[in-house]
Length: 130
Image (cartoon, rainbow, N blue to C red; front, side, top):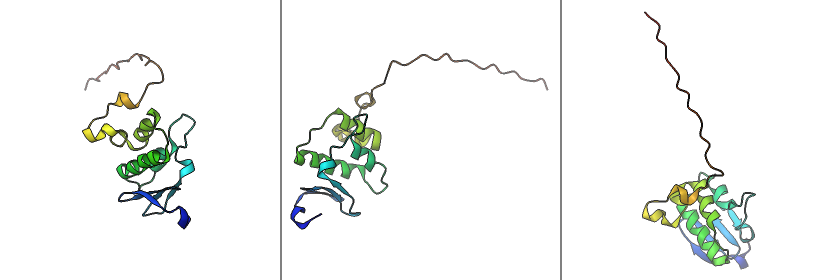
């Protein structure tokens, strides 16, 4: 990161948002502005899924910085962002309504197809005479 591009736009206890991207202040981990909106093949946002793999990343602080970066960089949010946070970090970190204490699983996940009924076979037990 160059000194000219180090103007801080936002800061919380762990993350700093600058004109050129996000930086974890403790580790120096850097997410370049040009890659903030990266998506995976299934349209999920890449960074919430990647950061969920990091043991040092606190979900609430990353989410706060990431959403601020999206706003500052003019990047539009969509429903896949909520799904990405939910799949990466869990339901509590996935939605702004989490502060209210509840996020419906149906708001985050969608089944691929109608569920298929599977017949249940009841095993019979036989007891040997003693």
